[in-house]
Image (cartoon, protein in one colour):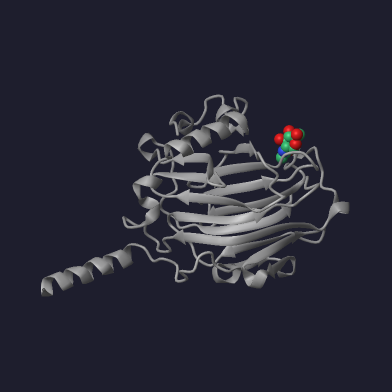
Length: 286
Ligand SMILES: *[C@@H]1O[C@H](CO)[C@@H](O)[C@H](O)[C@H]1NC(C)=O
């Protein structure tokens, strides 16, 4: 009896040591439970008692926010409604990043605006050990400014999956065994910014921002971050490590293929002018 109680105590201590879950269990969280403003308080407004926020971009400033915690594996997701109408030259970003050092890891979603009626582009990128240059671009198959859609990043020891409404648009597999760098030692925070980047964002910088259409607004809600806030990766017992999340299921794999065949407009792996010999991860498969 005594032994089994001790055993239980040890087990429960281990589980706690393995992964410190965020203190708030109510999901989704309010903005201020999980985040703080990092750039221009005056351009971020809380809505619906803090359950949602509005980001504003005008000629005086853009704005940004960051999570209070950093995570080593987990999943972050939020619902975003992007700038409607003429959003050319604007960039709305949602990303994870470790401390911004020379060897940082970073996982990016960047939403590149467009002229009215032209498709929004989502650019994703993966930095491992300070090296990025892994851009892929997908044109969204719906108008992301007409309604909220869910954007999420799942990150575990097996792979990193960027999803739009549960449809995987990018998978970066852990191919460390084949010499491909993989982010797995540095905790990452969650960030978002809205800014002007008309020197590159829309049609490679050809389409400029139209300040007559300012201010530009983007909306966020349903902040959901579940991850290990400790500095060492969890070894077990977290749902994002379960077999279901270690590789794409058959339906996810079909959706991912559908996106790549029908909606992908740029892949660094096939950009011969930048990479005459494509980087190793390009051959590693999904
Ligand atoms: C904007 O629209 C043009 C024309 O349809 C398209 O080629 C481009 O991929 C779209 N996205 C960006 C970011 O330029």
